[in-house]
Image (cartoon, rainbow, N blue to C red):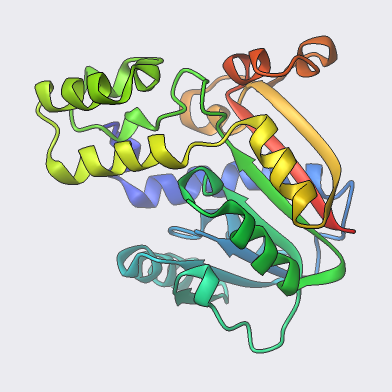
Length: 258
């Protein structure tokens, strides 16, 4: 497992840096990013929400992990910034009639079995002119299986290993000494994986219009993580179904309700 997955304060600040430098300028092309209501689904420690909170936004983070919610509350208190956090499955979350101008899902949708139910739920929570921002690693990209969370240092750095046949992949994980929890998590991601095409189809089916779709050869988050300069996938390659999943380390969708 890479060090940043153990040092959650560091991960919190890396996410905040990426949102400040890349996510907010990008979203500003489609929606106001100051003084608005922002919801993050699967917020973890809440790093993506910090720059919005500093822009006088009312920010809300929802995550299923009690530990991550406690960490988020602690980190925001340390930063002396207000935020609201709830430990809940988003499908069961009661927003108490509020609507949100921006809903963020960063590296979340690929973990969700019923993506259509998720997007339908978010549609009910979205303000009339609001947007849903979805960022995720396409399944076929080198680390689309999230194998970087593996306990084995070698395994966590093996690209494309998640594309092995299911039974072979599980056998390899166990041969490298991964515990049952990690094996279940990685096999679950294999089951719920997402591609560029998959999300586009589900978004259309659940009543969304795609305001923008952007593919990255080098994920913007890699600058804070690895010191790499972000790089957008050129348009000719972006239009090639299936192949583009192998070439993109991250996919951005900006969705509006029809």
